[in-house]
Length: 214
Length: 386
Image (cartoon, rainbow over all chains, first blue to last red; front, side):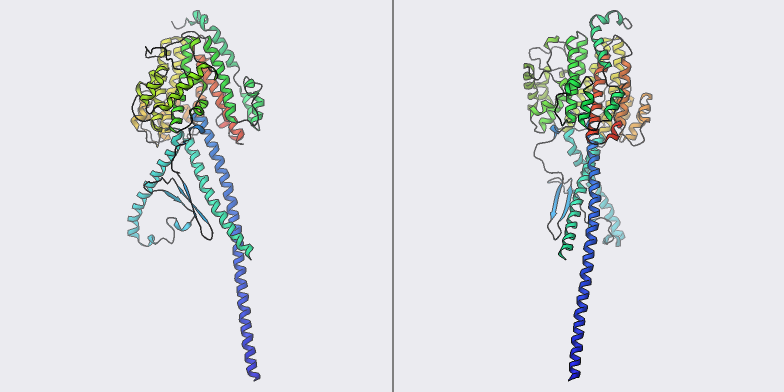
């Protein structure tokens, strides 16, 4: 009897120990998760502040290049009255994916009804070419053929982008100063950075929510 | 006869030459620019300019100022000075002074046509036009000659925006908006204007799009420069000698700018070559080489064969074109200042107008740098004159 009781107590003890071990493991896990959230938040915050500095600097550069272009080409050739009021499709669009953490993707120089050779700018690292996870590296022969076809596609896409860039600048005339093109590139980079900032802010808010839920 | 202008020039031109030399003394000096470069904001610039000839034009402008306001008011001062000289001038000086305006007329026509293509309001576009480039339609005058014919000073347009001629002007410039191609543009509006003779090379039925408008602009300017050059040659004497040098430099600079701006565009080599003027140091062999250039280093290679331009390009590093504008402006200012070293010719009027335009460009640049808090970059583009 007492032996049975002892076994019961022992088993209960074991259960209690299992439960407490489980609770401890769970606490450790949650603590780890919490630390991970804190780290993610701090990383996102750091990246966010860096990106904010970058966008301020790029915008400053863009406005200065625009002033240089006005100085070079003349105020009659670069002013707001030349901007096109006709209906035309947007040169760049923004897609928002409604997931647990909203993500933003910029589609630059995509023309409506075009050949679809737009350049997608996304912050998703897995979509980048030459990723270590890409299976193409394993098939060398096929990869070389695909690589040359890919190069041609990339070149054709670059040509399209060049044409779209020139088209958007054509409101100021067919022959514009290199300074105006420089200003366009600065503003384009600033736009990309703004999308990165939006994504970083989204991650930051998500990490902050994870921390505060605790 | 060259060398004997001193005997007769002052009869008709003495007063105006004295006026223009007086105006030249009022151009901003290096000390003025140094003071302006120290300004913290646009109100400081206005305060410093109040002690100059621009003072009365800026004093009533409310704060906060904008850089475009400063440029507009300074341009009004220039226009008033020009108007005073034009009203006092007799032939052939009056025709010479009229020629100075045609470049601005071309810019205004292109502005209206481009803005209309983009569905902008015509009134809004007219307000942006350069006042020196406004023109009347001489509708009661048969267009008998192929060159702009001289008119009496009293018949000339008025710069005042409130007078009747402005209403007439409004209707003629508004008519530009209905033109679909260059042939209509010419037939409806420009046939009775001083720009009419320059349209012979660009009369096509092609629709006006951005590239065609750009080609039209450059073709008109090419025809204008060539016509001005021939007119100065006919005048002879010191005017012909000095203006030939100044206009040749202008033609060469335009050729370089057209080349650089057309790199990477859809403008073909043949079309590019057609936009170069048929005179100047680079004509014809330099133009042949410039027409096939594909990057800035090739342009440099062409220009360094010509000693006057070798000095300009030597100031820039390879692959760089940022400082090219400043280098060209500095060379232009040097040549314009030299025009004042000789008397009894009309080139001083051209030089003065160009120097004032450079001064306004300097003020615009300084204002932009101050407004954008980029004072360290002011000296990238300011060109000092004296």
